Image (spheres, rainbow, N blue to C red):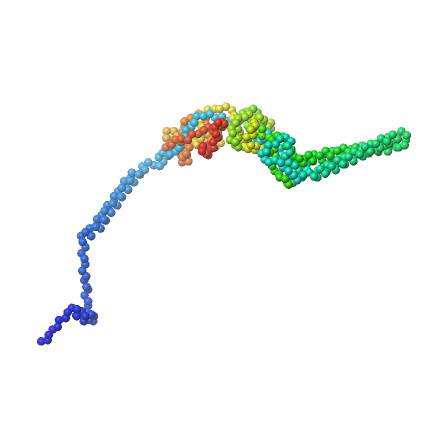
Length: 430
């Protein structure tokens, strides 16, 4: 009996590394860990909580949407607007013109007869000058030479006149003796008269040339101030060129060109209100003069208002706003200009009556200073007029009115004690 050998697993594995050809390997099974009870419950709880929170959010959103739902149609909802109360006031028709502040007299100083180079200019703008004071001089070497030549010609003509007169007198004494013919005497007498005429011509030329010489020294024609200096020494000027300008501002003239339909309202002595824009001064003065005819091109009436200016505070050439009141003041209701749409003497506006807006078209009696005026019968004082939110309104709409707190003035000219204000557009103050 043969002995059997027992092989250890290690040795057997070492000898059987490769399976025999055609052998089938059985799949190996690895042991799996069994999940614990806590690990399997946690995801289920998280999912359940998230679903509950989501459902709660959906419920809350539904409740909120139900509460915010508008059950009133938009057409029936009151529309928010801003209103202002119509003010009880008085209206007086006023005309407003734009005028110019002109000096009492003004002169442009320059040559009138000759062309020459400017030698000196002794004044500048702002200088105070007296009548006869030299303002500028011209280089007049040529006129001086000319006047000397003309004077010499006048002397020669004078000598010829005397010689011709003496010769004619001597020949006249020889007529009685028959020593000369009367014709010869008459010719000498005519020659004497001709020489006398040439002498007068020479004297006229002397006077004319002396005027040219006087034109070389330019003097102030009156007491005043230099307003402009147009040329400096070395410039060449021609007749009519103004080297300097002088103005007299002791009295100023406010000149205005008004519409011809206001001719009767602009009678002399009519009081007007003036606003001098350059100084911000407001003053009252009567109309001093009015032109008797209208301008043929512009069809305007020219009138002037004299304003005393002893302190010379008003600059010449500045702007003046002239207000002229016509007729008598009448009671009226006033609303801001931006609260109404005007067209051909009428204005369309919206008036709030017990929460309902009413569209009205009323005749306008006038406007002054950003305010529109209506008759009391057409618009009673205290009426609530819509100022903002009119674009979406129709007659009969329900509105939610908000009172405008701004205070409006009547726009009348201000007195000297009240400082001038600037408008903020559409009648609103800044």
